[in-house]
Image (cartoon, rainbow, N blue to C red; front, side):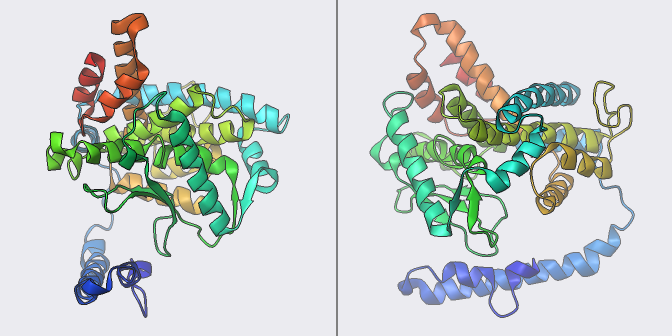
Length: 389
């Protein structure tokens, strides 16, 4: 919060500085109000809320977790089944990662191979050069997917690659277009002071954030907004639906052969592993579940935040500060992080059911466009609707 509030100038002031001059007074007033509100919240958290919760449990327990997960996922999950699914995905992905790591650095573990790629893998030099490269990656994906696996309206094809302003989130993100498309969809790369960017860490991430991930879904919602309620197409978004689609989009690009290069595929699998770990850790930690006997990590012990941090450090190629922020996120937003993998499973389940129902007549392009035009649904309704398309 201190970083957003700033000492001389706030993040909100920098953000609104790019707005139109005709709205300068209103934007400056809004930035000042937002900065003041955030400062008041910071002071309250520090001076009142923080001291009051000292010694309280960090995890929420099964009953509260069930309610939180319902909000984020739009379904009443069988939490024990979901926990077991997270472990099955962990083992599957780990085996695939070992195969790709062997191609890159024989004898190395997947995480040793990832660290090798940080220094010696394909990379892009320069912030602007990276922005242009990502724009070309999305433009190429649109050109090759349109007419084959999707049927895209012209205004949906416009997406801009951007560099995130200082003070933004540490991870790449996407902002959806306005309903009238006067503001395009945009992907944002936080540089965090870096000027050299490994390709393995970019490709599947931009398939997730951009095309065919978040951009195709959210821009399509805007395109068919006249057929959806404003709530359904904007603030009513179910997290697991959108994040599940974006993870499905990464897998789709793997299925279509866009990730055959070992470096790119290992990066994709590392991102997949991250989502599987989230299911294991988020559910396991909040429900204080036992680590199964088949796990190579502390079998038979019960999850704690400390064990969760250690587990991530051993099984994920992300930097330490990112992993620390992830743990804070799970403790503060129970049930949200599991939606990526469980949402992906819902999309895959719906597609497979539709494929079986139609047999040889199944049309992937038609199915994708119908699926993307539904607006946001919880996972229960999503699977039912996707299966019936």
